[in-house]
Image (cartoon, rainbow, N blue to C red; front, side):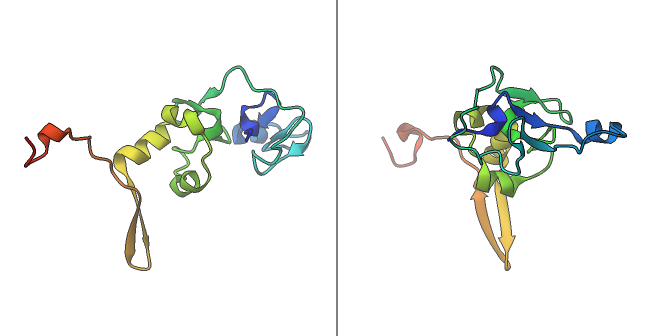
Length: 139
C-alpha cells in the first residue's frame, strides 16, 4: 500500500502559513497537487501520479526531531500531538517505525487504556530478553 505523505505531490501546510496568508486561495491543510484535499493519506492506493519522495523524513516544527513523513500531521509529529490511540490504530509506517520517536516511546514506556474501570495494556512494557543460563533453575 502506498502512503500519499511519501509522494512528492503531497501538500501539508502548517497552520502558521495559513494564518499568515491574509487574502488568497482557500487553504489546503493536506492533500494532493492533482486531486486536492484528502482527509486520508492512503485514499489513492493505485495513484498513477505517485512518485516517492527522495527524502522520506521531515523535521517536526515543534520538537525539532527528524521523524518519518508518515508521522507528520500539520508539520507536527504524532508524538507532539499526543495521538497515541491514533497511532495504535492507524500507523502503517512499516520499516519506518524503527525511526519514529513516538513508536519508540510507546514500546519503552507502554500505554494503558482505562475503560469501564478496567485497564488494558495496549503497548505493554517489554522486558529485556533473558538468556537461558540467566533463568533460575536452569544449568
